[in-house]
Length: 225
Image (spheres, rainbow, N blue to C red):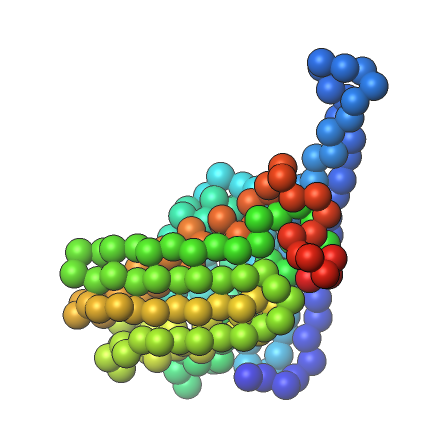
């Protein structure tokens, strides 16, 4: 992980009150959970724009074709609008680029989420993809923890090193404040295994970040997340 200077540009949470058509005395708080964040080091330059309440629109250019494909899947299956631009030292390998995108994406989710009031908090998803089965469980706990129970053969898919899958999700979890558990129960096709991980993470995250009308304040008996 790079320890060089980073610059954050935040779009923040924008809130507006909309009058109810049913009762003029009632109001509905509509929160746009959106953010833009940039990070520049001596190895990479990454910018992420994110709308957690989007429609799955993706515009991703990282210089790593397989990762572009995976982040597009994350956007579509997570129902978020995601714009990513990255430049990195790909002449070395994809490590710094993939990890730093994970760092910025994790911080972007954290910042767009804001105070976490009203969210469901937990997400769990099984995704089958042909011969592969994957499970992802997560908690927007504010206590970063990462478990990666998977054996992915170490090969290259284009210019993407498959071992970077673990590093990417570790970076997301640590910088977002997620408790994140990923299991590949079985599988043989490496593309299928990694794709199922990204799709399961997207669906579990969407479930956790969804607003739940039953939740008053924070989904915590302690009142703190």
